[in-house]
Length: 65
Image (cartoon, rainbow, N blue to C red):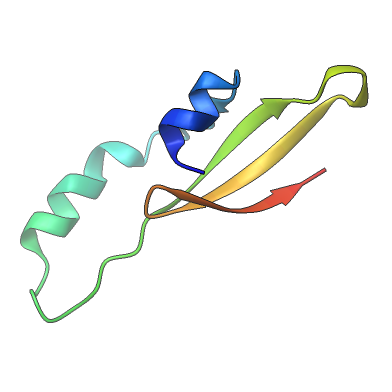
């Protein structure tokens, strides 16, 4: 699932303020080094409350209930 699909389901990015520097870090990094960006989304689960989704490089990887 992509971040666009998560937002379409009502999920919201948990932005702690560090994402603004991610583009700068990628632009200034050594091209031989792979950059990995991990962010979390909070998703509504109806009566079950909320879930946290861990997103790695724009693709949902794990869901925590």
